[in-house]
Image (cartoon, rainbow, N blue to C red; front, side):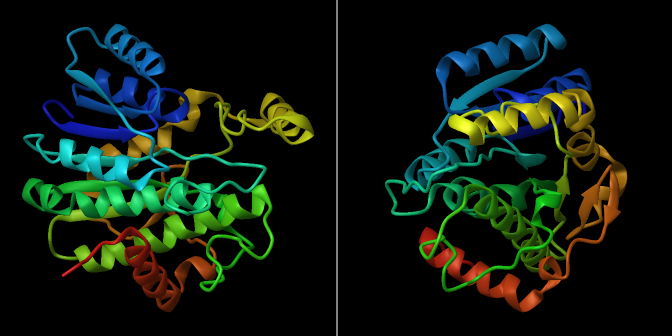
Length: 281
């Protein structure tokens, strides 16, 4: 990874920060994306301690707001090159919230941010080819399907079901993106990192938040293990050519039948571009 530039969203803690520190140790130039200045500065300090002399910088954006995602993409487009774009930021919200764009927050942060950032960086990524897009999804996608007429859970909301559907969106988006980028030298793959001991879900209070924290205490993987698959897909030689794959424990795996539905993937793509005011030619 020496001399390669890696952009990581959600990089101020958890899997994102652990991945950043590991890649810094391999010589990568790190472009971290976070929401909070204090956490961003702390993350930079940790990366620099892990790899003295590393080139690293932090950019701030609330990725649940599409205007901030577009602004971030405009800034990142000025980088000399992007070798890896790692869409890692995400969250789960017990109560239904609506963003300034009128989008349900889980859908906005976990799916639309991936779409808008990636597609807004398309030209920069094509110029840098060969390069990689890596999307963090989850095994939580299994057992759910998408209602394309109600992507934002207006007919009934639950935090966990909304999160699971957003992870299904990640896989379907990756699948369609890989199809459209075929032959360009830009690969697109997604992965399941495992159930990892991060700050995920800690934003929720009450019994909901308590249940998440207890589950992590007894069942979650340590951070270094949770970051392994992200690191592998970002660096392993085979993912320079493999595209459209879903990866679990650093091996290509088969996602659910719903995640392999190409018609749903195309329809989700069209709906997402419409919501994000994006075009693809």
